[in-house]
Length: 313
Image (cartoon, rainbow, N blue to C red; front, side, top):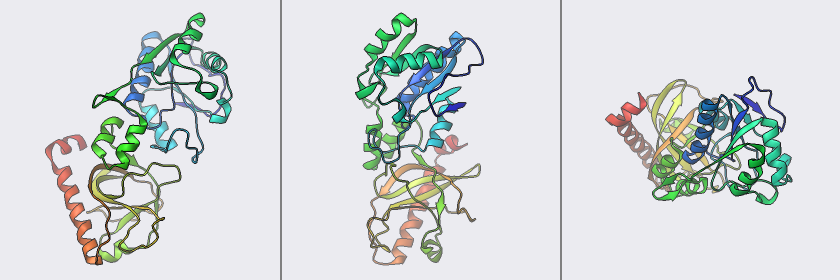
């Protein structure tokens, strides 16, 4: 997949033009995939190249809510859907464009033959552009416009906002269903206080970067990918109230039973599968250790189920 981080004409390898999926696509959830899959399928049927147009926001920008994916993971997921060209300028580069400037720019730079978007897609300065306006602007240009209906989950439209709300409530099954994959993080492992080693339950310590959505504090059944192998694991997200009085310091610590090795500086994938219990302050370190072991056993039992083994195989 060719990635362009600023607005510029595509150097297409053939003359069929492109089919462009447009949106912010923060999470690449099942609704986003419907839009992108539509563009990919249209391109294949018409001898065109599938493309995605999105934009980048600074990490501290709150316009689209907190982030669900890192930039690298977003790129990898979109590439896996069969996209050949990925346009991702900074928001500042497009924010002042009129709807007309935006559409004509996309059509010209991408040699677009078809544009795909969701029903709630907006574009241009002050989000003045709507799917209806998109159709009116594209009709005289001979560009097909496909507005993809909102994907439903539990009889309501799937949205990144709903996914964030599910994560905040610890409703991992709902978040995963709307994402179409397990919610996961891939942050560099950092040095912690070393308490896990002292207790005999060494953990990997990951810190959520600024601007990322935090799930509900508590203990989770997770699985962790190290190299090409997946391990059942238990993850504690929160302020570690048993050993830490600083409520502003949030850590994500994962115990991987059966694994030993140095992962500092690595960025293993940790997938969230079920919420077990809220964070709590234990009366002793022994109670904390027992809690970690109990969560680890729950994780091993969870992934030992026949249907989970089949999925993991």
